[in-house]
Amino acid sequence: MLAVFTPADSALKRSEPTDLAALPDNSVWIDMVKPSPDEDHAVERLAGIEIPTREDMQEIEISSRLYIENGARYMTASLMCAADTDSPRITPVTFILTRHRLVTVRYDAPKPFALVEMKLARLAPPTANGETVLLELLDAVIDRCADILERAGADVDQVSHDIFEPDESMRTGHAKRYSEILIAIGRKGDLTSKVRESLVSIGRVVTFVTAEADGVKWSKEMRAQLKTMQRDVASLTDHASYLSNKITFVLDAMLGVVNLEQNNIIKLFSVMAVVLMPPTLIASVYGMNFKMMPELEWTHGYPMALIMMLLAGALPYVFFKWKRWL
Image (cartoon, rainbow, N blue to C red; front, top):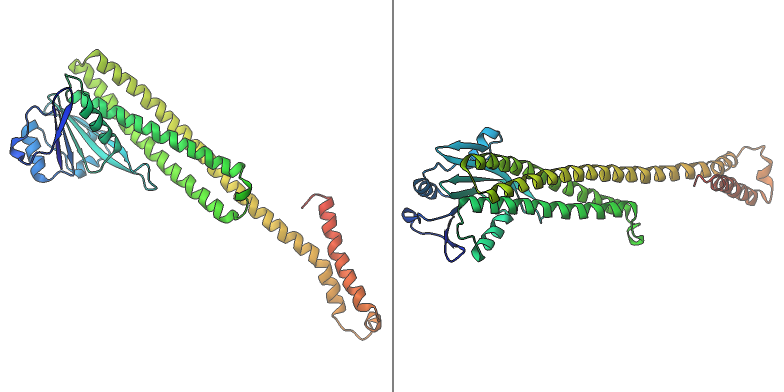
């Protein structure tokens, strides 16, 4: 799919041209979503650039993600997708800045793109160009990462509360509850690692753009905005690292609680074995049926054996309670 944005009445008007041979020359932003070969060729003719393939976008080397070719600046970043679901993912997005026009190539739908599109459709600066749209997209991506980290932090706090201060209604069914908590911790850890990966990638793009902005004499306001983005990315990366450490602590605490529960169960079985051992010994002695056992001929032998077994089981239990071992 190909979407072209052109200036119109203090906004950017979105259109999806059907005639690829007549793309508007005054387009400020061309957004390519899962482009076809014909769409690639049409944009290449208009902008005088080469559109990278999906395999090229998935390269992890810095030299393959941030470079200049024929005057065009190619920047590939890893962005978050489906962060609000149980299966978040990372998708590569390429930003190509050439002759004050921005071309974006993507194969997924990161939320910041829809937000920026709606914002520019309402209001855009009169001098809006590719650099303006690029800064808007980068700013929206950073804000989105911040929102994801805030929500993940709140969820981790709730998980921590469930571990250390569970409600009375949650104290039963430990195995199921612990399984749910471990799954939640795993999901938050995976989400945080993906956000951190996205922030590192965006940080490299912002640094690259900042270096290029100094060379092409961008406006003072744009350079100030880039500096602010760099600080935001650095602070969010630190926060993601802190959150990752907190998740590790919560996971260790959860495993410690599980081990404690298992130890309590083993201790209970051990105490029950000790409590039942003396009655078992008494029952074994009187189950021998030797001929010269005087209690066998005694009228009260059976009640006496039962009483002895009860006392033999009760005394160890009382002793354990007195020692506070139970």
